Amino acid sequence: MKKFLNTLRNIWKIEDLKSRIINTVVLLLVYRLGSFVVLPGINPDALSSGSTSGLFGLFDMFAGGAFSRASIFALGIMPYISASIVIQLLSVAVPMFQKMQKEGEDGRNKINQITRALTIIITLVQGVAYITNLRNEQAAAIYNDGFGFMFTAIMVLIAGTMFTMWLGERITDKGLGNGISLIIMVGIIARLPFGLAAEFSSRLNESGGGLIVFLVEIVMWLAVILAVIALVQGTRKIPVQYAKRVVGRQMVGGARSYVPMKVNAAGVMPIIFAQALLFIPGTIAQAFPNSDSATSGFLANFMNPVSWSYNITTAVLIILFTYFYTAITYSPNQIADDLKRNGGFIPGVKPGKQTSDFIDNILSRITLPGSVFLAFVAIFPSIAMLFNINNEFAQFYGGTSLLILVGVILDTLQQVESHLLMRQYDGLLEGGAKIKGKAPAGMTM
Image (cartoon, rainbow, N blue to C red):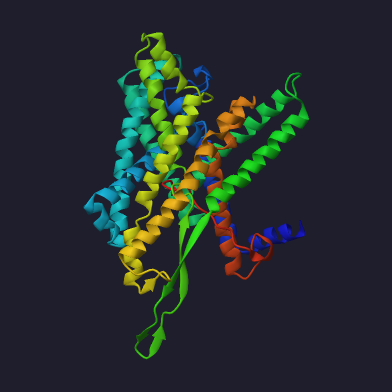
């Protein structure tokens, strides 16, 4: 405890770190306050309190409840995340984007401008869909429905998303950690107290099992968090030796390093892709409500989070998407070329194709257990629901929520520790042990 208090005092002694923490808290507070400001023309008292589910529930989770409250930040940062994913995929398949990536700072600026423009387009499309759904589901909450309301609301949604993106960039520049990731994390963690309170009250009922059952659930939840931390931090280090060479009158090189290969290089993206695909059966069922009972029952299984069909399909899709996303994240050929260009080689492996094959082989081996573990983490909330854990609290037993929380917190703690060690203070852990953080892949978000 004394060590922890000393660390907090050391953090507050560093003016730059203290300023960054204050800036981060203030900017996140601005975002949270904005998520309670409803769109113009909406009566907040008339909004129904029905819980969102499916794709809307996923959006509402990332937006911290702003989606269901018809807030000016209802779409949150998700359009920007979607645009970033599209640009990332184009950078793998389109030569023009590959060329821009290799142009250094100028190329990155061009890609950022394209990403922002694509964000506006995606926000416009999602804004039209959101307002249309709002007019159908919450018609009583709209004062004067019409073209004027729809146009104004869509413009406000676009401005809200761009302002949220600006807040994320300011947090990254002037604050602590990755701003986009922190905004998503704050929206998710805002739901945790309500989930804990709901589970606690349900366990205190006569048929709930009492306080002991609640404490057992908390212990199990902490065990799952530790397992997710191991998944996020798991790394396979490939040793690399750099050849010595003469530059002028000096001998340089000869250093040993390593290439880090993440066990879960894909982050949360396979879960998001899998969930997005599993929303399709529900959409089909809603589009054809008069279909025969057999078809309706088949589609209903994919809408039930505790059914075998839903969980097995989710696990298989996550494993497949993990391999796909890892393949576009890591390029063994490019890694091998970079090593050869810089005079590096893996001991016992010839440079060139053999190095590429060696890296590809290792990547395939570590991706399999990583993808299986990720699939288990994704379906663990469904397992928790089978044990009568409250649905709201069960979402934090795994899945996208827990992976984002763990990844962002580790990444932020790593930056705090870097500031401490740079100024010769002890790190956050005993003996200055390093924390390996990782922001969610594809959400760097």
